[in-house]
Image (tube, rainbow, N blue to C red; front, side, top):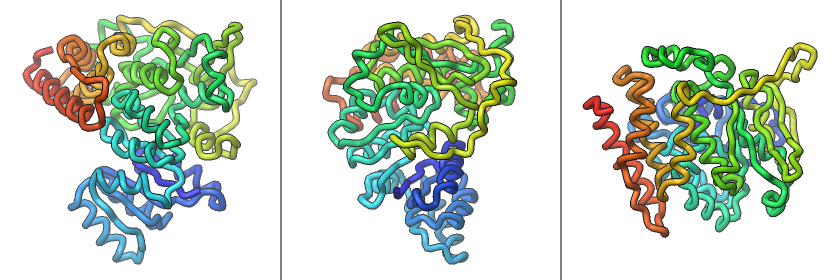
Length: 392
């Protein structure tokens, strides 16, 4: 399998390369990409010697190219979003790990889908923003879409290989959430949360943006939207519960009320290895569960006072076409401003809620990628202005 890892310097990308290193006879790393961590990308290229490396802009690409050439690395260095799409759709690539963070990953995800790749989707925004457009590309391109988020991978692992049987088997699905660092914190104290506190996840090691999303539970809101498209389920058939141990990664409730669950240690190498090997399984490097040390598995409902952002997902799904893209763009801007110290923690929710209430998407039934990009950019501009003016 010739693999392209888009977003190779992030946590998902690094875990993917860790799994690939365990199966050198099975996986050939043919392409890598990075946005800003060029030193890490250079180290990865020196180790893997992929055919291509893609960097976000020309200046960085020239620097990476110069350093690789000085060390005798044959990797061809490309620059920009179009290069990312060309690599994702290249005939010599069999599988694409889509781990570019945020809406910026949508064009390359679409390119891979339209080219019929095995598409390992770690970029939930591709579905949150792209929705029907993205799933149509998957169908028309004949791509094999495999979710990598631990929750969606868990659902996928509980379902039969024949997707045509899913509708008749499933009553609803339950996405689990750890509850993040503020699961038991007084809601009244959340106004004072700092970026470092929000990024201190008790279970998972993730990038700062995703860590903040976990702290607000906006990550779960986006996952609810993602699940609607991945599994073709109405919003009311998707539920979420807090499970602080992060052992049960999600559940499928069948028509007969049997419950199927996928359990495992909280290690992203498990869904990554499953996606790379599907429909087979292969060693991931994850530790085995120590059953004797598991004192309890507990579940609880999310408190809307503490996690109001979670409940925006169902609102967005019931709103006009494009509302989920509005929510995603607003959240990306809000988290960026929070991490920069320019707004407060609870202001993230306020900006997201205002965007859903005040911005009408106005997308036609035949909306395409350009329409979605225009919508995304327009929302970012308006929400950024609100944040800068403190119009919350």
